[in-house]
Length: 363
Image (cartoon, rainbow, N blue to C red; front, side, top):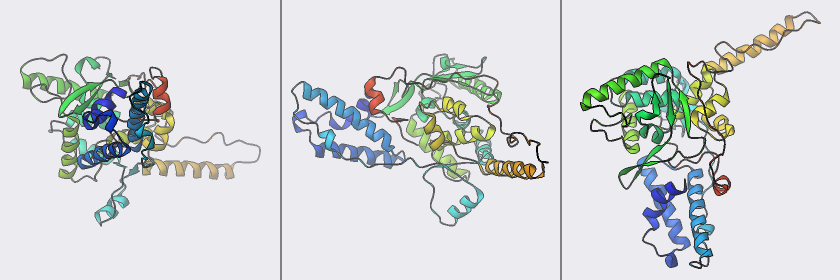
């Protein structure tokens, strides 16, 4: 994480600034420039990421103070805006109608299962269909999908392993370790996703005229990986082309969590799928309740209460029945082995890092 902060944010802005000239104003200007760049790209950094970047800078400047190169730490005095993560809302019919009538667009929104299926069907002939299919169903981060290589995928076992993330630095792709210990994980794949990836591999071999067994799963015909920014812009164009309610690329990850909850997965399984270190983040930020699930829950509670009223005294109605379609586990042909501990993080990372530090934003 520290290396990615230096490479992606700190060095591009401060590399030419002598330590003796580093001031509060210089640090404040750096954060402003970083914020404006990502806003212009449509990939705003979360407040958690910004605070994490400052934590890295403070640690580096504290080391300079210990070496006698500085007398004060300017990063200590820069105030950053507080931010509460917006909770994802579902694009219901009523919300779509309000937006189409000129209403505000939600900051974080997810599609219904029907809209997700409609989108994936509409883009079947698009070059990014396999990648977007995987992200929509299994919730990979943008950089994780871009950095996925064929040795990470086991089509026979129906699994893939997240062992790296691809970011962009000065216009060039850079492979970095996963953002946290919990982010390094193995995901189970359903049979349909396995088939989609098998077709992707066959098409890749045919288009290139050569097999690249160590290559990127999602790449241009010459083997170059897709840049994260390309994925964002291409996805945005597809959403607009097919008339879907607007969401960001990162909202597919929120959507995968929401759909998993609706399909019956428990929060622990969803936490492992997303690679979160904290189940609180999974519950509070990444999962939303689809309208049909909320209706099933309401109907189930009402049925239980009414049944209790009809039960003769002394007889138990038994525990409330879970609404149809909801189980404690998510039916999958293969069981993932997620990692959700802080193992592998340094003490400094545990202190400075928040629950889900994204080198890339919620995009």
